[in-house]
Image (cartoon, rainbow, N blue to C red; front, top):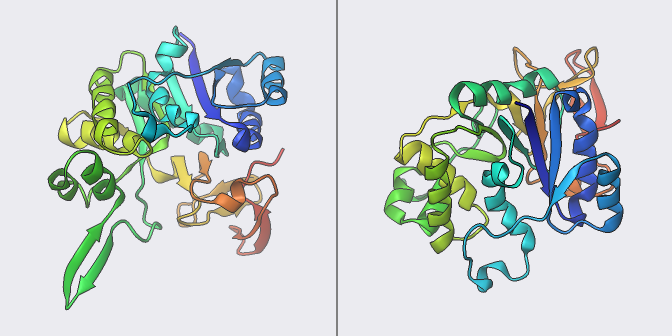
Length: 294
């Protein structure tokens, strides 16, 4: 069976979606590519149709109160990414990529497919030796007054503070890039947790709550991939290998980064390119954007 890569955007991120498409390069010889249209304009739609890319408008998978939506139809993607096989049936493995990601090294990127085939679901936790802060602790008179983390905040609002405290110190699953096999046995539980999380909590972040509950609470295993598979550039800038023309992780052994992820980098995600001072493996410093360049 063939495998499918899926992404999504509204017109605000259309330029990033096009860059992601171009970054796939040789990958599109092995994968099909499809898009959830969350508000693209005709020019962008026609561009992808000219490339024989299938576009589908996602639906709300669960009944969501209107006050939570407030016209933000792009929030559908918090759910639809876990229903790729519903919208695009007939594939063996489904790989999700946020539109603010792009493929830097195809060989590293392939680990998502390998993990999906091996264990049913593959994803990268937000942990690495170069990511400095995992938990935010506020102190008062030498004692922790407040402990905050992504898991604590999201799970406390969606489920309960008791469960939020239990998993406050656990790593967060990054939902911007993952893969699953169409036979993944944990998908029903994952979707059930997604519905549970969105019923009480916010829509945005419900995906990370569901991923955490399914893995930690329900003991469903994922194939956990290293951080260089999905590099969070906001947390630590990568280095650049001039010989390979690839971004690499900043410390030895300087693995080739699979996915460059611009989550949280609002200026970099705008149309105008932002140049950063990037160290090379030759110990030079160059000015280079973190976005994909043809």
